[in-house]
Amino acid sequence: MHELVVPRLNGNDDTCRLTEWPHPDGSDIAEQDPVAVVETSKAASEIYSDAAGILHALVPVGAECRIGQVIGYVFEDEPERQAFLRANPAHAADPERQDLPALTLTAAARRLSEQENLTEDQLRSLGKRIVRESDVEALVRRSAPEDSTALSPRQRAIATVVSRTHRTVPDAFVAVKVYCDDLLERLRASNAAQQEAVGLPEAVITRLAGLKPAFPVFFARMAEDERLLLPEDRTDIGVTVDVGTGLFVPVVRDAGALSSSQVADLLMEFRIKALRESFHEDDLSGGQLSVSLNTDPDVLVAVPIILAPQVCMVSIASVQTEIVLDEGRVSPRRHFTVGLAYDHRAINGREAVAFLTALKSSVEQPQESDR
Image (tube, rainbow, N blue to C red):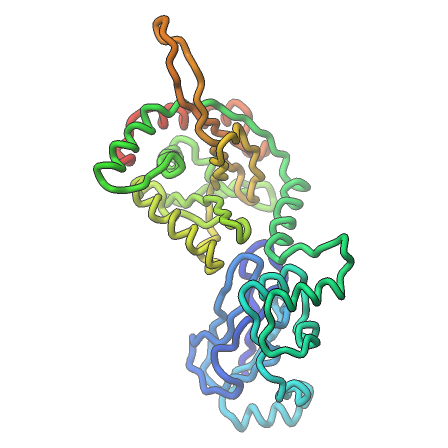
């Protein structure tokens, strides 16, 4: 008998929701078959079987599971499974729930039910096989105080991360002004010639990756014993994405080997995945340094929160225009603010300013990666 155990899928969630058993109970499965799909506050992940045999599920779809919980077994054959069930009748399927019809929720209804932490029994109390958003709204009005609402699972995970950072990371912040007229003109010309849509964030990400050889500590991780774990050769940079479905920080893999155009393609893929809420844990893990994009008009500066165990996070604000005197003539000049929140245990103020100054110089100079 082989146990199916919920693994730790990320550093933030201690629970997850079982969303699917791809194979019916009692199915014959092969080694490394995906046997369950679970969803954390960030993404959906498949659980694979390390053994071949007969599947026996212990928890129903929709149940909340703890990390490390046994959610099913894989038996060598059906006789072994039946012998186990005779010896352990509590692990047999619940007869009261076997004949219940499948419960179907619209996408909007599912989002709202997750936000309000409604159980399957609460949803079944509606007496409907197809549950719509208006049904869930009515249920919430009946069961919850009018002046309160529960945080969504994803927002609770964000709360866990930022609360831990505020408790454990002695952070500091510094920002610099970066002039970008030349870069924006180069991007405009390149976009027109190549029929692309490369923007300022993509160009900055490629430049950040180029700083790693000179500033390896900024791409390191802080261990629990306050030792710095220096990064591998490949440079993986996280980027914030929020299209209204929650905050995600997917990772641009090997950013130092990519052009700005390739980074732009990846960021578009990330936005689509965020809109569809289709990220997997692999998309969101392993970042060495992260970038917070705050490019809405009139955002002058943003102070990001470090995603521990990373030791810093860069913020990019929107492009602004200022008026300057150029040999007695009044001229416009564009700039944006780059901020750096950093863990003071690993990085000092002088080093932080040197890092931002190097990034500023890189942005203000032509780069082959802009093409």
